Length: 59
Image (tube, rainbow, N blue to C red; front, side, top):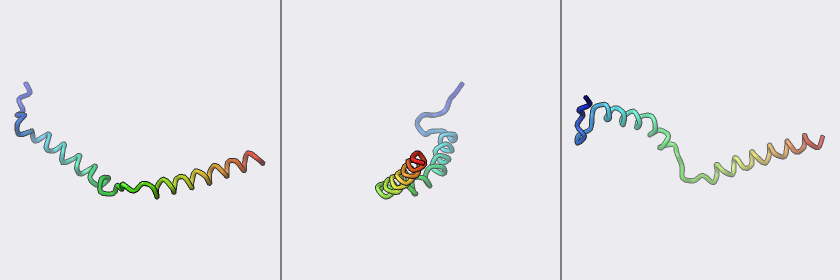
């Protein structure tokens, strides 16, 4: 029978939360709300690849 207390949480829950924080906090800390430079970079990369593909189709 499972008899963990729901008021204080369990040690297993604490370990789960600590693991989650250890894994995901670095991603959160490295994130940015300013995605425009990222989108511009990938748009430029896509346009360059698209132009190169179009040139190959012409040949």
